[in-house]
Length: 430
Image (tube, rainbow, N blue to C red):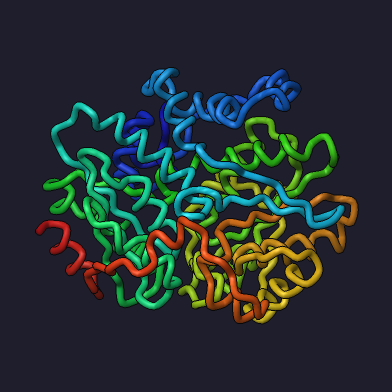
């Protein structure tokens, strides 16, 4: 499979080069040249397939022939070493739990998959690769864990100071080894802008090999399509009209769901559930795409004012606004509404949701008002204890810490504070 830049001013390239480069030379995101739907026999026999078998069939066209099938099967099996349960709340709403991995966030899948792909590509390479990544919360911990100790790979994580939860910060600042954390005086958008600037800095890239582990990287983004097929497997015998509500920040997750749809997943609609950072919600109402500086909310992983992956969504739907609008709805919710939803979920269903999942739940409720026969699945993208202060304040119940969280509590934080791109550049060159 080859990939092209969505800015259309760079040569097409291989999966390997797309993974290692992260971003195309013309600043564009990479996108696969073709998408071949899976055969009907795949969907007809999905109940008999394991998660690893499903994921292998879904991803192999995007990585072949550069990763041999036997190696790819091993990568997939190692990536998916935990469960993805669907929990039913009532006849109309379920949640897909994506927090059973090592850092208790949905990004564990993409980070683990990418780390193993890059490790395979770099196994005979004497040159080190530096993975440069911006995080609004969960990406940093997932990437740090996924790449920890990977030979020939250094990881530098940028995160906005004071704008991630304490546990999220511990997960990305306490591992040491080949993981370095930079605490940025600014927002996630500032972090993301620095990363993109670094990729385009010839002086920097002539001296070191940079790649990204944000969802701009195809190896981080594409594996997220697995979740949607896993949920379909669990629900398709019970419900005819399954709709997904995805808490959306950089829009990699909902975009991956749409890629699963392109592979033939029998899903007719998606819901992009936003917090106050609602550029896409506004776009679907006005047809005007106007990124704005992000604002801080209690669902901090979604605090993105310029979602990178929206251009991929537009590409999937051939830049046709009406086609896009027919396939995705979007709603925006305040912090107060999010807190009310968390309390409602707890009181009505005895289920503890994190703030991001609560935004997804609100998206389900909004959609079901006009589509009462659908079964809506909201993605619970991170374990609620990663947002302990918010969760315990809302439901007034102390929450036990899972082993994965206990493992980082009390560890020594190590980070470097920066404010400008020049400081980032100097850190990388040193």
